[in-house]
Image (cartoon, rainbow, N blue to C red; front, top):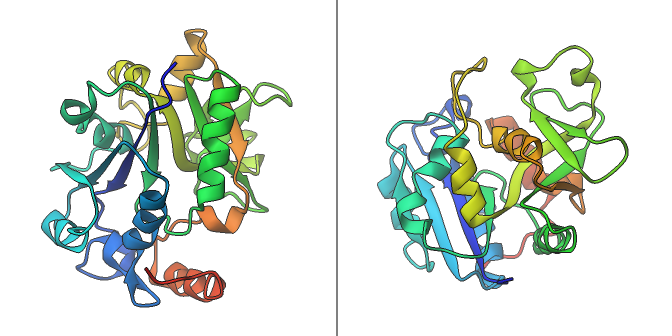
Length: 250
């Protein structure tokens, strides 16, 4: 079994709630674009291949990341996370190994949590592994459906599609995954968009894989704060102050 690693970073969104005409991932924390903070972490981990999916004003993201060893793929229409990953197939189809999928607006994802995710993925022989987090209020996030108390992940249900019972679950999907690369692309082709947002969710691959008898695992992040995404100027400000002691410029 190969131990080659690739990473796909999703960075195509505009971020309507940021009240700005900048791509969401180019908003700054401590003077640095949030995607650069994440890319610094990924660059240190020695991936065999790094791909960034751009969309809204993507040329600005390309300029900002010009010094990183990355390839770029365009998502012209934002039709969901599954669709974003599908845009990378031409570039990634020949890759044999494990692929990390991370969100460009989650800047403080740590190397420790990424390594923990890869380790769990390998040790459990999983086809896919999800990085989760547990919080008091998981409103707005996709909920983790485990098989009992085990580390087996059966499904991820998006907040807008969840029942009242599922909404009580405090463990949520951080948007960070490891996949067997070949199986990822094979499964994404089976994902539909019959949901509340009419989008192709990457998270739907989890239930499809589980129902096909493939092992899917889940592991919590080292620190739930590090997987908080940035969807508003208020969240940006809060994370900037929360991580001021842990921030080290490149």
